[in-house]
Amino acid sequence: MIKLKSLLPEQIITQTRNDFANSVDVSELKSELGVDSNTFWILFDKVVNDLNKLPNPIPVYRGIQADEVDYKNLGKHWTYEKEKAKAYFGGPNPKANLIVLQGTIDKQYINQIETIARNILSSNEKEILIDNPSKVVLNTLKK
Image (cartoon, rainbow, N blue to C red; front, side):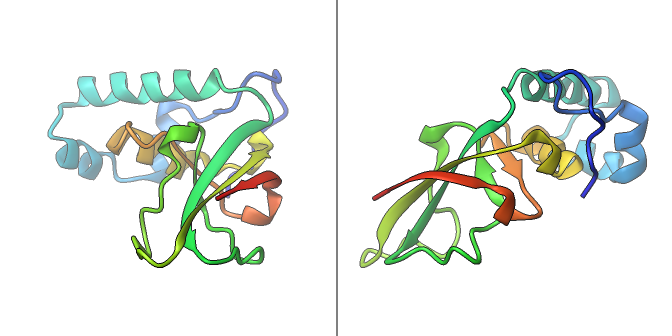
């Protein structure tokens, strides 16, 4: 995980285009999206701008399909939009409950590279990738 520098409180993403390009295979991402370089970097800038607008700490949500929560393994994939909190993996199991975890995460604990890449590839999920889910401060648990 990349540790964020202490910047203005509203900032979240410190990745520059060059930092990002040195960390991921941009040509693979462009190919997967079917876009040219100019369009890709426009998407990158939009994602970074959207993420920079989030408050600190960031409200996060995670939907899981289970009968009970394993608090030692909360998962790395969260969203910053409550309505996006669905159980994407491990379900749906019609016998298990949909549980929505709600909490906050300090900006310094998000995985910047993966969060940017995932939001470029699938902007509808509004995903935040957290390498150390124990850093999420749980507020409520809704079934």
